[in-house]
Image (cartoon, rainbow, N blue to C red; front, side):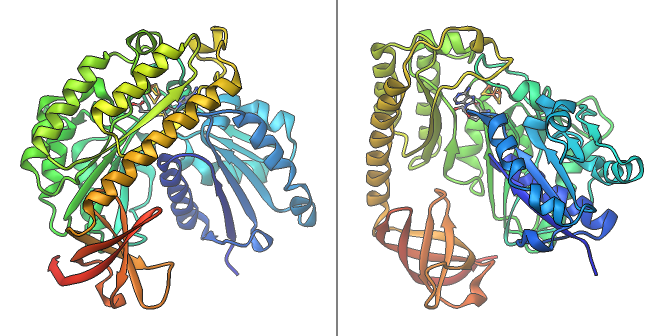
Length: 447
Ligand code: SAM
Ligand code: F3S
């Protein structure tokens, strides 16, 4: 009987990607199969995230819940990976004796060895080092799980925003060589993938080695190469950084039709004073200017962002600057958070001056405004015909299928399952809370 792996993932798309790689590595090395039922699992992996509040405490309370599971069969193993593991290292196993393996985002490819070590030595195996790009050389060939896929093109972050733990937990920026990225994209296309999302903490800091030359490929050029891979019809990327948003990337929006009409460009705040304290490396005016030029290159683009409210010393006036910026840029989507001090970051040394109730009040105002803009954006699309990549049978059932438009919104519509993996034209007939209802107008116009 094959061994079973139960995986719990916290956090972002990057962690989802890492989790799928953990499953691939263990399938290849030990024949582990992923299960949704913890009772039949032999190995539990917790892939953690420490970007926001109380991450450590959440991990320890989650671990506490697995005591009886482990007692039921002492051969069962528990591993903790991701950013909390990277920050805490050995301390996790010291504080919670249930834990057998501790590994970081950069050492997940070493899981097979860590598993053997803990079994042989009967003590916790810990490796939270940053062996840079070795991870990608050791990962098995990617396995497509549908018609869309993520491809990690770079790891880590060297921006050191004062509020953020990522540079400390995932290490500095390291780009994968161009040929490796293109090979992975082509392998996925060969398995039926039609849409790729290029992934990294700062994808536009990508500088991939080009063959044996000294030349480096940036994100704009990479997008053009990926667009030439047969079968790949749509390209997304996340997350990009405003300070590295180059003219060539703006040009790509004008010239590369396979690049999706959706951009997530975190701004965090609309106040120059707060942006300076956050060490973001751009001003409000510079951000607005980039958005203006991107919109010129790609009219109708869907624009998303990240916001932090209640950064230390943020005044009502600073917050209103953020609200003005929202109006000026017209974001139709956003991820927004109350500021929370992250241990080990420079901002954690500042006094957290904005009371929680005030942070929450500002967050509520901001989220309501974004919701209005989202509704208006979606309303304007009702009646238009959009190209949809059919991804799956709709959760709504009754003969419906579902897919995404270029602007990253889901559409549900009547149609046969045989269209999964095809691009079709769909008229958006109705706006729903998190999606559209549509009507199929033309089948398989591409791919
Ligand atoms: N690379 C991205 C960028 O250019 O900003 C950010 C990646 S970060 C992992 C994801 C988001 O988490 C950030 O954009 C920020 O809004 C939020 N975040 C990070 N640290 C935070 C903190 N200490 N408190 C609240 N939100 C935080
Ligand atoms: Fe974090 Fe700033 Fe990098 S938010 S991931 S340090 S760009």
